[in-house]
Image 1: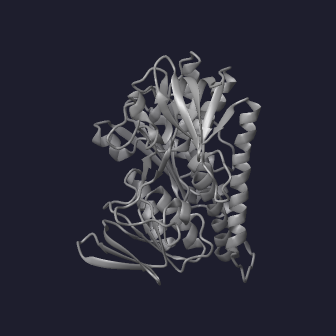
Image 2 (image 1 turned 45 degrees about the horizontal axis):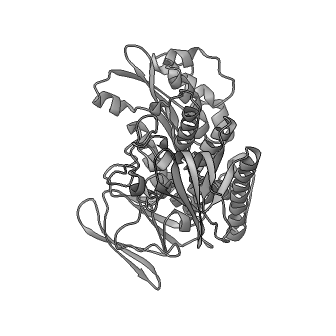
Image 3 (image 1 turned 90 degrees about the vertical axis):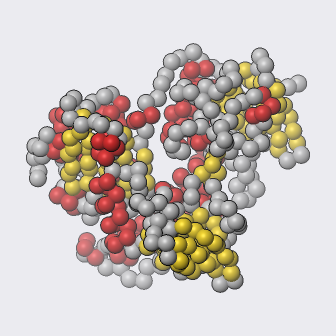
Length: 476
């Protein structure tokens, strides 16, 4: 007999598996369709994020940062180290073990919450009072019925026309996470989050890295103060060669590596020779094969499922979340949408303030921000006041040897409400969460300034930046 569920989630990435867990917690009979296979051919939950995205990249970032510290930054502590070597095989094995632990953890959550894992890839067959879905796993196919469907099919790397990706010589994020040795010369197309993170991993491990970016500005989404600090850090202190305004003309794979023909920001023809090339030019939604046309599900010209602010599609009881819908392609955004949709199906009325979703780049130092930048606020006609404070005079930062960067707060000039916070520091990803909380509760810079912060901690810099909004920093 065909199985019937209250909720069927298509996709078990961060948005999908969290949506399934929350729906099951709320007493809904829930299933989740997922057919991802790891390099060993084993079915695995977790989607791109856990398998070939967030989790493995952070593992390699940590390993490369540890090697960098041992090789170049222990002398100031009075510790002498010589002959440090990199074993890429063991480094990759550590990364794979972490990924395996995380994906098995989701399997445990499914068993704990009595969620049925439908192994395969799902698509719509028919609609009406409920929805019939097909689950295909190779030649094996089955159909299930669902009262509610949550589309959480995620995204995949966008490739350039006429640039075939084999994930051996020319790679996207998957191949760039799986190198078996450090390339002598690494080329990266795209200076976005993924390009910078992966480029910095292999630079620390010994590669000469050149990044070609089409846009004329660096990290255009960031506050200008952060842009300048990050540019100085990555190009000068860390020797990443970043070429802005680069237009890719041709990519040729040769026996000796890859040749990239491009024009620079002055329109002059240039060539880049490298051993490996990483193409990191954004991501596109996974809606091919979803069967949207079978039920009349609206998908836009770019492949995104059309939804409203509550993640409702044009069809009754069909929802869509995460990378497959509008908004930033961020795992934590997908998770929050998954919770919101599950709770709405159960009759609750949660909402998401998309202005309070943090952005994080896990370079070293990290870059994190939430809300608006100073230049964006001014362009929107909002009068603002700002406060900025450096880590260079923070005792905890100096003691840990991580004194680079600053915190900048953008507040409404009339009400003092915090509109945006921007951090560049080794621990920006953790420090930004205080700002997210304050903004979610519509707090003011004065609120942060009046709250006692532990001493000595990095969080004191957030407080000092809030004090600086009213020109009353205590330690500068």
